[in-house]
Image 1 (tube, rainbow, N blue to C red):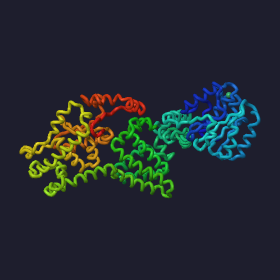
Image 2 (cartoon, rainbow, N blue to C red; image 1 turned 120 degrees about the horizontal axis):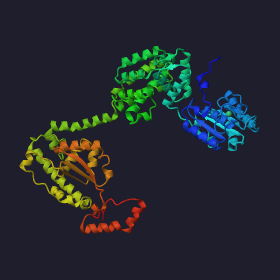
Image 3 (cartoon, helix red, strand yellow; image 1 turned 180 degrees about the vertical axis):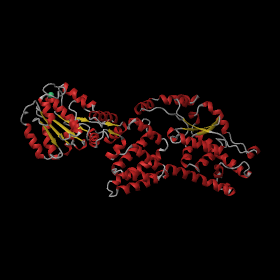
Image 4 (tube, rainbow, N blue to C red; image 1 turned 120 degrees about the vertical axis):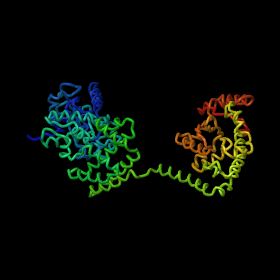
Length: 596
Ligand SMILES: [Zn+2]
């Protein structure tokens, strides 16, 4: 007796035997029940997920003598279809019958009524292989299919089927079979065949099957033909040349730890076991991908279709490394494996890839390099300042030595005075700017008196001050911006757009008119950096707070006559209409000299 391969032996004959396509099965059964089966259907999906199986079950159901909803599987029609002898079921392999002549012959045949059964059923497998002429010849028939004909197409490459054909078909997209479903299905088959396969070995087979029932059954065939009643994971490695995930885990760990010797030894062992290099490298790639997903995603189990134990192991390794390191290694292996396809020496190619990958931990990300560069650039003026303090202080403005924020209290008095006097005019200027910006409209009145006090013209430097130059936020604001400019140029530019800065309860409050001016500045890491700069410069603990003037309209209106004027403006019909048309809102109303 010849051996019937499992894929044929286990081919589902009824809807309930189909593995992992419950949704599509339900839709098809409903269509049968309501007698609404489309005359052209197309089943798509990767190989071995049940496309032609479903088409055959549908064919049986349509022609079954006993039931209109599902094949009975024992009437003469069902039996003939099962045995492949039905005269009214035409199964065509699109790959070998792809020309126009075959389609013409088929069309000729369709003109006649079914020989024995109710319907003629045409199944074309790999339909995407048909030539364009063949597709065109089919079109007319698909547009108006004869009542006694049903077309069922199957394809692994839906995108290669012309849209003109697709638009005339009912489409069914089959999923890959989930890992757990494959495991339980293979366990059932093994049981039926009287084989004892360890759970870990079943996991390996399901993983290798990668969503395809047929691929997994092919592997099981090999395992069964090997003989022996009990199969362990080690046997699998022997029989199929498959590698246990533990090997990938060890290899990945070696590469991540830059232990090249261990990685090459592992490869040597695996090679000695007759492992297929290509399959092996793909397995490694898959393992690294899983590690990365484990690291990045909050719910990796939603993406990774693996066993619970594998998930635990992955998480343990992933926790030890950064996303950057993991993605570096993944990238190197990915590119290497892709290039390996054409190599005549796959093993040597793989070794080269390992050498590169083992150095992946040493690759410095660009962001980190830029960070270092920033630090270096910031450090340079510091050194200059401390090396030549006098020259620097007599230079224009003298803000850079001040900006360094490193001047000891015992710094030359002369220098401190220079800085103070230099700041006076700057503070005054700042105040001028604030006035022009119509402060009353932007800043709640309650703050104003205190602000005015702070903005009072600076008194000449007293002896106290000279001894311990305490920097004030408003008075020394421009000096601070200069300090920042030498460390982060963009940040200084952003600060220059601020309308006001003040200090309250150890908080440096910086106000902006428009949130778009301080978007980047508001990012937590930038706030943190700015706080560091502020602490350096003002020599005290300061936190930074960015405030944007987009409070309620009432706040912006201010008081007195000006308030009345603004209210009138806000209620102007033209303004109201603009707001409605543009879907906007009033951010602020300015009636200062600048606006007029
Ligand atoms: Zn039947």
